[in-house]
Length: 466
Image 1 (cartoon, one colour):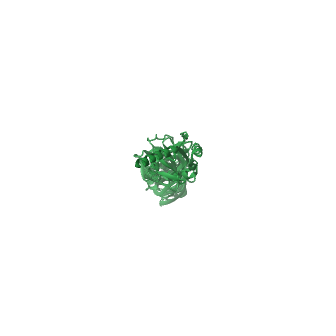
Image 2 (tube, rainbow, N blue to C red; image 1 turned 135 degrees about the vertical axis):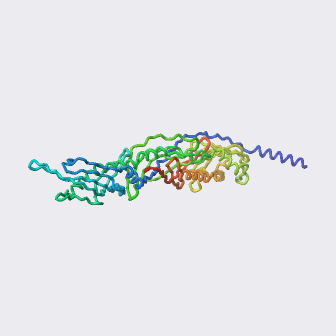
């Protein structure tokens, strides 16, 4: 009796299995469209901060001793004056707006007198005196497109430190004559000498060229993940030089493409420093692209961990059990291959649009549905499965978080942009802001999430006024 029941059970099972329908579907073609993505242009700020005290020290070092000498009494239209001018004490320099103001204390030796001829008799009388005077000159500084500095100098005022004795008996030299000659000599001789020292001290072209060359060198952000920051500058501009007592300030702005490169260290850029463009302000809006990869193999294993051998009931009597998965790309969509047994045996294909969810920082497959061929086959042989209940069951299982990967990438990039001395005298400082999704790209091996990160980036170059 038991044998009869057991045999009947086996027959029933075989009959049931034999009644399971076999579905025939066509696999969607696997295809990937190569896609290049270019970062947006960023503006990188390079502050120019010139210490007036260092310029003053340089000027005083190189402007010393005898500054001017006139040994001819007949110079300047026969003024009967001879002069020797030397530095009395240190030159004082300050800055205000676009002007450098310097006070030049001078020690002057003067020989003066008269020479006349009357009734065939030549009369002459000359005396010598020493005195000290401070002359204040103002130099307007302006940049030119070749990164040089143009200067326009004028006398602002003068003040006596020690007044001269210009009266010898009945003879007196007019004070204004002495001042006029002296001031003209300093504007023509000492002014240009000091201007040359200032131009030498503010060597903008070398400063900017060093920064321009250095930022084109790739910066390794993470040796472990082979991640590098590449900056490709395209344009450079600068605000006017602006003085404020002890400092001269300006901002250099560099427009550049900035990107994170994964893999081998990219080649350094070699674009030459372009001509200067002047601007009223230099914005600092840094933008970099980060990418996070979800390999198909990983996506498949994650889905398997939740769905493999899982059985789903439909209409009470129908059921299917998931036996395998595969995931790949086709014409911009993600294809999910599902192998199943149960009330229906075979393979069906789902398709969805890969989408980045900024709130959860995850990839989802939006608008998931049966592939057209699979749906057609189901309508013919398993109409009960062709409706959207199965799709709704499946879709939540295909959500993949990239939060940790993006957090790590952003953290590495931020570290590389914080007090990073990328070369001698060149310091990189920046701050990254929020992540902004751009798109999902399907590659042959993975889903790649492209994410923009905005922020600020500055480059400081030491040693401009050394």
